[in-house]
Length: 283
Ligand code: AMP
Ligand code: FE
Ligand code: FE
Ligand code: ZN
Image (cartoon, rainbow, N blue to C red):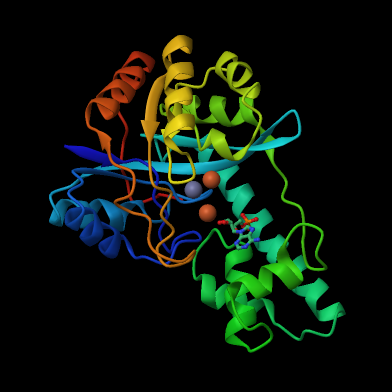
C-alpha cells in the first residue's frame, strides 16, 4: 500500500478534478491520497466521494503559506476539523486576501496597458483560492501572453510589474492553527527553501513531520531529511505536489510513500486528541 500526501486540484491551482486525481491514483497503484489545496478545504466533499468510488483512503488536508525568519515556508495540515471556527475564519481571511491580490495584479496590468479584467481571472479560477497561475492562464486565454511561462516571465514573477507580495502568517501560527483544529502539521518540501537550519527551529514550534520525499528532492536530500526527521522525532512523509497539467506533466505517481508513513502520522494525530468531523460546511 502506497500513499501520496500532497496533491492539488482545480479548487486551488491544480487542473485536475478530484475524480481525475482518483483515476490517476488508482492507475499508479496508490491506496491513499491527500488533497492539499492551498488555503482551502473546498474540494474535500467531492474528493471524499471520488475516493469512496475508487476505493482509496482519503486524507483531508490543506497547504498553508507561512514564513519563518522571512523565508516562505509551506505547512501541510492533515485531518483537520473543517468546522473549527478559528481555522474557518483564518481560511476565509486568506481567501479574501487572495481575491484582493488578484484585483491588485489586474490593476497593475491595466496600468501597463494590458486590459485584463478581474472577472475573467475569477471565472477561470472558479474556486475560493485563486492565485497567480489563474492570472497567467487568463493572460494566455485573452491573447496577451503566448504561454504560461511567458506570463510569469513578463508580468507575474517576483520583481515583475504585476507581482504583488502575499501576506504570510508565521510558521508557528500555522502549526498552532492546524493543531487547534485537531490536525497534524508537516513541513512541505524543505528542499525548496535552501535553509535547512530552519528545520530544527520549526520542529521546536511543534511541527509533527517533514515532507522528505517530493518531486523536487533528489535521493540525497530525501535521505538527509529522513535522517533529520528521525533525529528530531518527527514523522517522515512524502508527496508528489501534483498540480495536474498546470506545470507540464502530471506528477502524481512519481512519489509513492509506503503506508507505514501514514500510520506514523496518524499516531502523531491520535496523541493529540479528537477525531475529525466531516460536514457540509467545508471552506
Ligand atoms: P501564488 O500562490 O498565487 O503566489 O502562486 C504560486 C504558484 O505559481 C505556484 O503554484 C507556483 O508553482 C507558480 N509559479 C510561481 N512562480 C512561477 C514561475 N516563474 N513560472 C511558473 N509558475 C510559477
Ligand atoms: Fe500550488
Ligand atoms: Fe508548496
Ligand atoms: Zn503544494
